[in-house]
Image 1 (cartoon, rainbow, N blue to C red):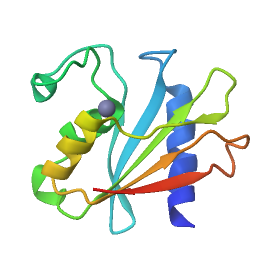
Image 2 (cartoon, rainbow, N blue to C red):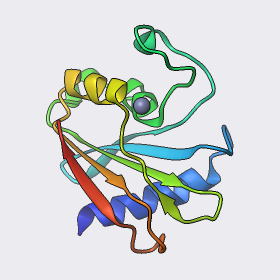
Image 3 (cartoon, rainbow, N blue to C red):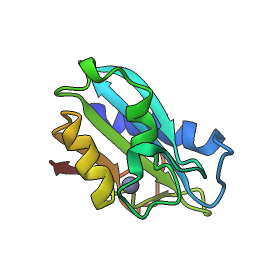
Length: 128
Ligand SMILES: [Zn+2]
């Protein structure tokens, strides 16, 4: 399944990201089988989240901000999380991220759930 392939890539990237070792999340914006942008959780705020309680720039938002808005319509987002154990963890987007992704034209999000195997991560789909 192609979303698993993207999730494996994102899990590898999340493991290398050093911005925030307690929340190793990585998000990819994917369209037509190509990765358009990559985002990580970052310990800073951004105007895009000014209406929310967020103290961090979430990985999904970071990925969206690095992507031209014109190519976002119909794109898919893949979000993954690595736990301290090195295993995939639940990466379901929060309500604020869901709202922003929807506003940018994203209709489908795929995210990892808690599972034992980073090579075969379990993926859930969320329709926005
Ligand atoms: Zn979020």
